[in-house]
Amino acid sequence: DAKTTQPNSMESNEEEPVHLPCNHSTISGTDYIHWYRQLPSQGPEYVIHGLTSNVNNRMASLAIAEDRKSSTLILHRATLRDAAVYYCILRDVSGGTSYGKLTFGQGTILTVHP
Amino acid sequence: DAMVIQNPRYQVTQFGKPVTLSCSQTLNHNVMYWYQQKSSQAPKLLFHYYDKDFNNEADTPDNFQSRRPNTSFCFLDIRSPGLGDAAMYLCATSREVKGVTQYFGPGTRLLVL
Image (cartoon, chains in turn yellow, cyan):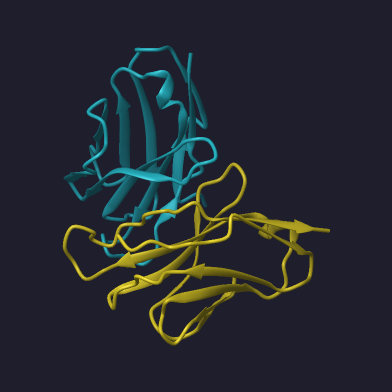
């Protein structure tokens, strides 16, 4: 499975934007970029995903580099509730043994200060 | 309107005593997954069911088994828990194997004494 690299931790202040980077230099053409987050004492939850184009939803935006070797999850206005571990995951949906499974890396611990 | 339910939230068992963890879903999804998450680590996939078809990950120990009696329920059986099996166990579902989103339950934290 293609690997991702994320900073171990990041900090932000409430109401400010947060940019969470992810490097995936070995990404293949059939890998989608997925982001999940895990709040304390909860299971992971889906945030956003994309293939080539930038994506927006009610939770966040995903900016994907033109060469797809990196991406950035953008939280436009961080709240205390956004404090979580954020996982950037490559998901191959082309078939074969990987069948689209999620392989979690270590993720980025986001701390939000009031 | 809970979608993926795991009971109990906390489970204590004794070393070597079989234990079963439960997961149910109200989403009518075809796929159910079990993940193990040890302290300060990322979730690791153990196995998944696509409908009644069981798919084991290559590195999942034989000590871990699973049953899916119907669409809604899936069980994780640990035949002889060791101290190293203490972890959070997460159940997840998706509509299809290649479904975009996996929906996770809150997890069951297992303590082995």
